[in-house]
Structures are given as structure tokens and as C-alpha cells.
Image (tube, rainbow, N blue to C red):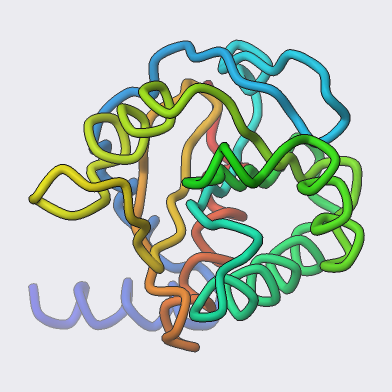
Length: 185
């Protein structure tokens, strides 16, 4: 019996086969929402149906982690450029300052492609998305932001959280985006 198990293991190694990795967990669904993109057009959550996307929460006047997060998200944009149906979504937490025109300039400054959306809208909607949908933000109820990236699949299920400051976490995100992009719906 041990000999056959060893033989099977050797065959997997030589054939380049590996047992399939377990699927990523599901942390909850992203409901529909209505916001405005950097072009001033209405953007709904339905627009993301059928796409794999990576989201974050930021604000353009941030002097702390936001520029670095946007730089890291640009890296994800580049590493996923050849994957069809992959998008990036940055939600502002400062809709009073981050108008579509301001977001458009910020997007340009960070090398955003046409598949990277910067969204603004009503403060309560953004607060709900940050806190209640994506489970980010402070427990005191203030609308602050996390430095996490969130992976969402084609069915709008949250599949993972990634530390934007950790290179290993970022590499895992890039790998997981590819894995989720290969999943059948």
C-alpha cells in the first residue's frame, strides 16, 4: 500500500500535476449600489457582474497611505492586464472633496487604465459599503479607511482581504486574482 502511494506521488511530480488548491472562501455578497465614476457617469454595482475586481477605499488628499496604496493597485493593474474581465475599483471616503473631476485627475496621476474606476457619491452609501458590506473601517462609526485590498469574484462575492503594505500579501492577491479569473461561474 505504501509503495502505491509513493508511486502515485512520484507520478504527480513528474507529470507536473498538483492537487487542486482549495477554492478561496466567500465572505459575503456585494449588493447593488449607485455611485458616480471619475467621468461623472452613474456607476452601479451591477456593472461589475461577471467581472473579477479588486477594491480599496482611499481619498485623494490623503498624505498617509493612499498614494502608496494607489501605487500598489497600479501594480495589480499591470500584473492583470492580460486577464479579461478584471477591474479595479477605488471608493473615496471623502466625497465632499473627491468630485468626479478630482478623481479623474487622481486617476490620471496614478496611471489608471479604463478598467480602473474611482467612485464617489453619497456619504451614507460609501459608509455602508465600507463598514457593512466590505467590513472595513473603525468600530466607532467614523468613515475612515483600511489599507486592505478586497478581491471580489464574478458573482460579487468577497473572496479575500490583502494587506497593501505586505509584499507577500500583494503577491498572494495577484495569484488569487488569476485563480478566481479561471473559476467557472
